[in-house]
Length: 77
Ligand SMILES: [Zn+2]
Image 1 (cartoon, rainbow, N blue to C red):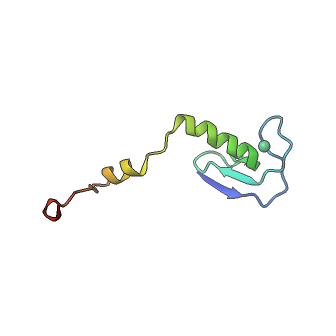
Image 2 (image 1 turned 120 degrees about the vertical axis):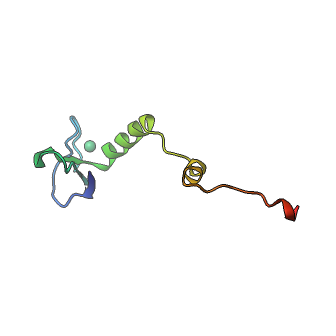
Image 3 (image 1 turned 60 degrees about the vertical axis):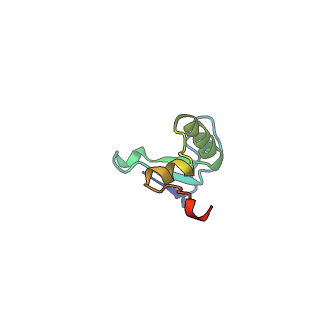
């Protein structure tokens, strides 16, 4: 999946929205005509809704998962 800047003057695909679609969401694994044109406002709303489902990992969790550990050097204390 890819989100690109829309080069065409197309209306937002979201029902009831009359803005120009600034962005295009490309679903590469599906059919070509399943691409979605979306305006910045709708993209933001989509992002907010997604964030309720998919919680981003905190930097601390990412560091721990990658094997990085904060080790205090006791010899210097
Ligand atoms: Zn829209």
